[in-house]
Amino acid sequence: MEHDFLPIIGTDHIELYVGNAKQSALYYQYAFGYRLVAYAGPETGIRDRASYVLEQGKIRLVLTSPLFDVHPISTHIKKHGDGVKVIALEVSDAEKSWEETTSRGASSYQEPRTLEDEFGTVTISSIHTYGEVIHTFVDRKNYNGPFLPQFMERKSQYSSQPVGFKFIDHCVGNVGWGEMNKWVNFYEKVMGFSLLVTFDDKDISTEYSALMSKVVANGNGYIKFPINEPAKGKKKSQIEEYLDYYNSPGVQHIAIATDDIIFTVEELRKRGVEFLEVPPTYYDDLHNRVGEIDENIKSLQNLNILVDRDKEGYLLQIFTKPVQDRPTLFYEIIQRKGARSFGKGNFKALFEAIEREQELRGNL
Image (cartoon, rainbow, N blue to C red; front, side):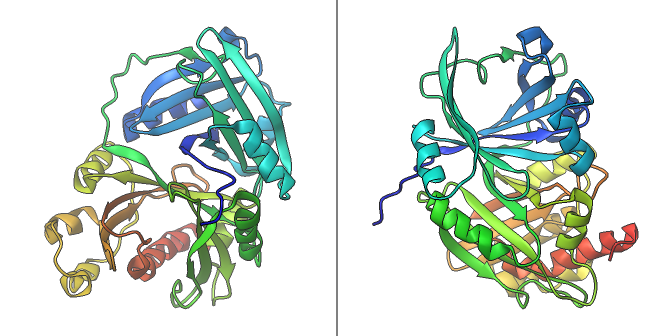
């Protein structure tokens, strides 16, 4: 087996730049069941921004807002709206990770540096990827604080209730016309990922629109990045709509794993999270398409949960509507029962549901 020059322990955190981090943090606590664990801002010596750290299961979200109008984060939010800036990966050596990737062609965003406080030391470094998204390498083995130096422990007076989120299953990037292979090659060459699966416009198309996608994964399979690009269709694809509103390539959706999707989706719906809807006819021949499953099909239909099967087993999945007014970032909730694929059998129903939303927005 080829040497893995970039061993990754897992996803360390995902940082979103948002217009109002204080309010967003409360939304993610109430609607998605995260708990507030840390904060950084003027009170902790950081003068130009405020950041709230939220956790559930192994997932760590960081929500950051600028405190001044003339600021790179302000520029980012004006251009993109709320969106993902950082996909941070936990590694055992952030300096070596930066050296390995930059020596293979990655553009450096931040050279390795070590941060220190009374809880220990953390070394971090960052590289550019598609659009304005960066990967930050985090070595926190010598640290036991709430998040990073200059963050203080912070708990909310609001008692959030978890919804069963376990970890990030995969994170999807949308790139421009003809750019998918460029970024797949980037992950293969620069980060040592391998191509897991390819979907072309015959796999992912409807009467009106199409897209192409390739999925890359790291050596241990913990990190999976599908990369989407538009394909020619009669009308505007969801990827084109995303690019129009985000104004560059970026993270389209984050897929979150659960062990009980029925419980998770029931909880999310109770709290006002909106999901894409597929027509009732999707369930008419579900048993014939996917075979025996443990779940009651009526329960799945009531919640609009989709099912697909591959050689290893089956999966259940559902997609939220965008979580901000721009039709950009959304979330997928996924439960795997053996299946290692991405729901190819659901693509047509799913993308027709997205097109119905696009049509309502006047963007199809």
